[in-house]
Image 1 (tube, rainbow, N blue to C red):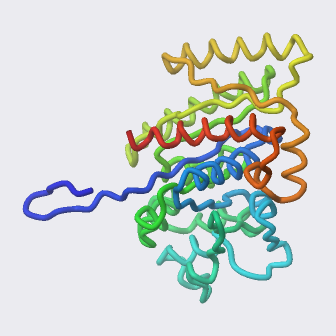
Image 2 (image 1 turned 45 degrees about the horizontal axis):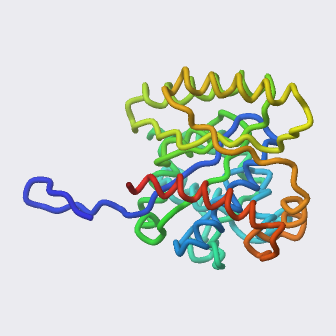
Length: 285
């Protein structure tokens, strides 16, 4: 796609970037990101996952373990993309780090935990390092969708992710902590908008995860969270809850997506993740 700017034409990248975000840990961001990527692949799209969490759980789901510092990660690529950090540059380029598969991956390692300190000396906007890395490597023209699995913080890694994406998806567990966390999350998005560097990304969906339908309190908390979403965003962006399913646990333990299983027990999960893929595809509407 092109648009005119004076006499020249500037290409608009076709790809869209989506972050799976929640400042609270243990809500299933990694599982949601991994299976949503495979749902998009199942629908015929070319998909890249980027692990932005120093815990590197998404990388482990792809059966990639850099815990022994064997190989480079997204951390090294982002450092290499900053000219002011030349003394810290390594010889690694994207092709050294990118892991090809049904869904491609740029893995993470523990080095990411020092990202904020590493970037402290630079004079340019530290919030845009990831965005500029994606642009420099033309990744938005090489992939239909790029999914980011983000750490459970509101630090510089998450700010970089938010400044680089078109949309965000928020997995959560229905409890009082999640309700309070959502308010902080909305405030963070407003802060990004106030920076004036980029537009705040679109909130695509909230996904209730690890729901126990036997607990009445969870039903009440979920309804309260729905009202908070409607009040803040003006519409209900709550997707169908994911209940504690043995099939999801089994696939994760086997480092496979739910789409690697064709038995009828997995079909409800196929449908749910396809609905998330539908929401993501809506960015192109």
